Length: 372
View 1: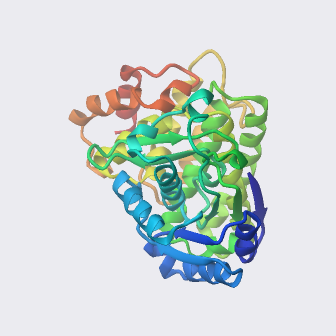
View 2: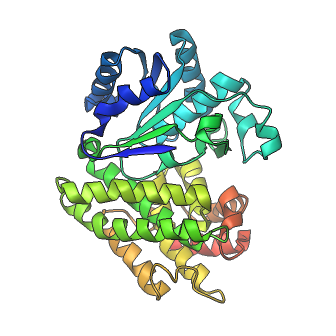
């Protein structure tokens, strides 16, 4: 994967699509991005480069297999030979899901998990893909996985293809990081995705699958995000802060690709599925409790971020307050009687296995009770 970074870099979209020898693009986006004018700008750049462009604006928050299926229909009608995902993590993940189904067929649920190389070798190469984030949060543009929800159970399914981009994997051929596109983030979206990015830096730093390379990415992401997050929350027009947030979120996404997440994400997914809590808010709410839980083990898994884990937990709590993010589950309608079912689902989440301390259902229950 190659990355283009800088203000105004959306102008290179058509050039990069042409470099991949494509001529018929499906632009995957959502109504909010369209309303901000970004989809029209991207379409114009692609058409100026000589590409035919069709727009699918059916991506939604927490995209489901139904959204993906509708996008596949749009891609077939357009005879697309490349995909451009323009938006937040939901639009980019939807583009990835469309690529999987369009190229390989089948149902979204059949792509759940992290297939071994011998299984991936049986798949055809995916279409060239360019991802362009308009929010500074998920880092999806740096990852080989899409999070797609089951439309019946609402459970999030991580669907992966770790082949290199040039070999047809799910990471994009190009990621375009244009800080100008994040100017239009609504304040509520900006605060949620900022906390999500913070959680990515923290959880990858502590992941038991972390490597030296992933830890370096986590630390640099934390440095950028910790400095920029308070500034973007107080002044959305701070260009330097928005630039650092976008780059930090991207580096944290790259750290996920090389390691994995942990209990905060495992606990957040059931909250989104059952109570509709926005992902970034759910992760942020659980993160201080997870930091304290993990630091109660034999060693501090966050040593390279802050030597004192309690200071780290309090720093996250301060950022939650700055972002106006509620810190109690009761705010979202969660009651004591809901916690056992939530804990069972959290302990079964894929990300739970990478937490630095083993996470049982009993542990997850204690975390939820602390957050109630």
